[in-house]
Length: 167
Length: 229
Image (cartoon, rainbow over all chains, first blue to last red; front, side, top):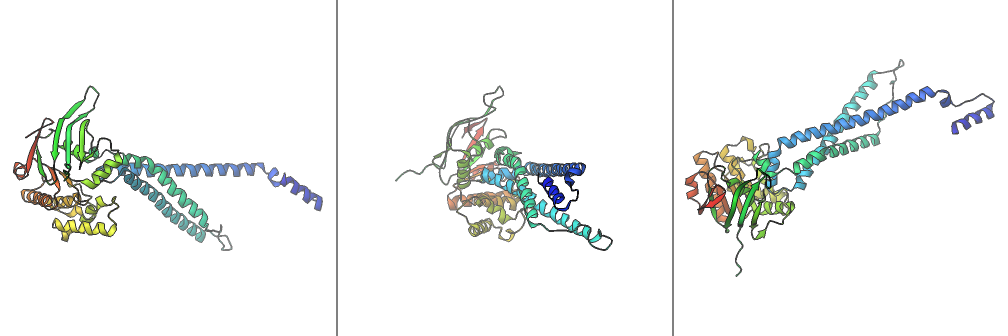
């Protein structure tokens, strides 16, 4: 194992008794691993709740706008166009939510950096803006919104115009 | 010279709900109806007689349980939803009893709605056509007002303009004057009549008003799902 060979090389080169710190601190690594698992679970459930939130908002919109959807269908707007309108709305909700969330999160971190200082006045944690991470987050949120919108969009597209207008 | 196809041709059209179940209810019983280009036809009859169902079938919003329907000579029985939607969008305009405008949009935007899905109307042409129609119904000054801020008569005139956006060969009006005062009802009827005469638009006009029915070219009566008169 590379850790062991490093320790052996240090021992061989310096005569100092060296050992792998990973091997000597198993609880620390178990804690780190548990934290990573908890992080992943939290992210998954946050994503799921966002998707369910967007889906429920869109279901309500579809019910509230069913008459307008019926009118649009009567005027020759196709099922595909109705489907695209609601998918677009889901995607925009996801993207908009992510932009607002990122702005609030970024603002909060800057405040933290401003107020949480070490004794010598330096920030407790350095902040690094990661454009790639932001891009991935925005893309994931948009995709989540799109996926969440599929069921309500299909429901809207399949509305019977006679029922929708009459209702 | 080849004979022009009828704008609407129904042969033996029946409509049953809950077909094949113990509670099957047939609301239209073998309707035959032909409407030629430029005809202005009133449909009268008591509530629940099947007038709206007939209009929904002619308007391709609903399918008959039996019988045939052709619009401008095109048989509709074998058309899928996409083809029906396209035929409806290009050939048929609707005016409902309630204007059904999108109240958060302006009058102009409401009239532009049917043209959104039509490739023959790029943005500027769409706006120009909508403005022309708004002008034709006498609402130029109101073009940029929200539909929700207009009177019932004005809203119904916008609905007429919207129904004519795609220059349809057939206009279906389901009691468009039912919610209007006498003066507004007369204005809306006159508007429909004018478009019928100027553009040769065939109009099927459902009404409970015998005075308006008398002013149409012909009147058909629907009683218990059958045509009389």
